[in-house]
Length: 340
Image (tube, rainbow, N blue to C red; front, side, top):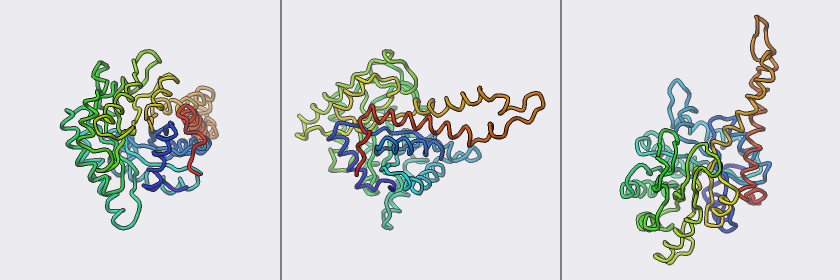
């Protein structure tokens, strides 16, 4: 199937919300990790989301120029071609973009998609994220209003992060403390500024103790039940039941019960990066250790071309990451739920 159209993406999110499941959103940094994500979704019979962070886009742009827009556009165009060979619907998304990178990343990509839409084509990406969590909520929402209007014109969904997620993601960091919990007042102010769909559709990355990066279960206090309070508080104010489509950030190390509670309370998208990075790298490390005398020209020998051929260990990496994507779809209940 091709990359999801705006209509198909909207249907994906609606089905997830109604069915109380979520799509894994897999960060990719290369054509190889893209194929690993696509393979995992296909093997699980799950539609899904593939996303590119600012750091990932810079890496994709090549270390000579490190141009984020070039990197993101190149992989997105590649994805539009290769995704047709996988029997699932895939949405393309750009991950965390802070204020100082908007002009060099999200705004140019929005303009590019608007130009495509005006000429009768589908947008290049299906959604973009504005990470204003380092700003005051007032400034965050002011910028979000501008971006939402532009996204709507380009048939794109905006993702907003209104309060901090702990840890570090592509240079944006927040301490792990009580500020990592979105309040009902925060949610009401968001609805007042961005509407509840009439000004354009958006995904909401609310904070319920989430932390980016690596941590063991129990080291972070997650309160996914807080999402229910946010939905109910806004519903009581505006009269719209279950108004938000929530995103789960910083999910590495979450318990199965925490994930299930989040799904029951409106999460439709959960980001995965740390776990899939490890799943991709671990088989490569195993291969290198097991075949050290083949991948290295030890003591003046010539090594073993079949051992150091990137295709040899690259296939192992793809399989390892794909398996982790399958596992994620099972945890998030999207496995077997692709649009027929």
